[in-house]
Image 1 (tube, rainbow, N blue to C red):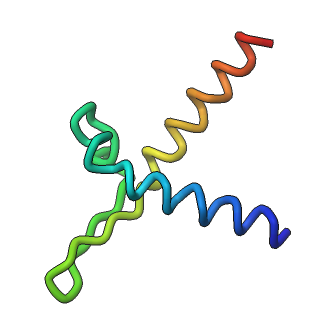
Image 2 (tube, rainbow, N blue to C red; image 1 turned 135 degrees about the vertical axis):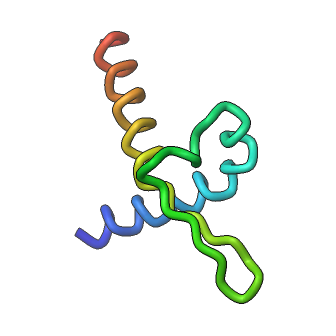
Length: 65
């Protein structure tokens, strides 16, 4: 279970670092994504975008199988 938590945490860190580039194509601004400002810094929790990307990767993997 720790392996899965670590994998999800690393995935969210990577996604958060790619977020400025992904916002140009519309990801990171979906209705399920959470954005808040704390001490002058904007934090983003991309829940809906993560689900959308995982579904896309799942469909792509099934088509290539």
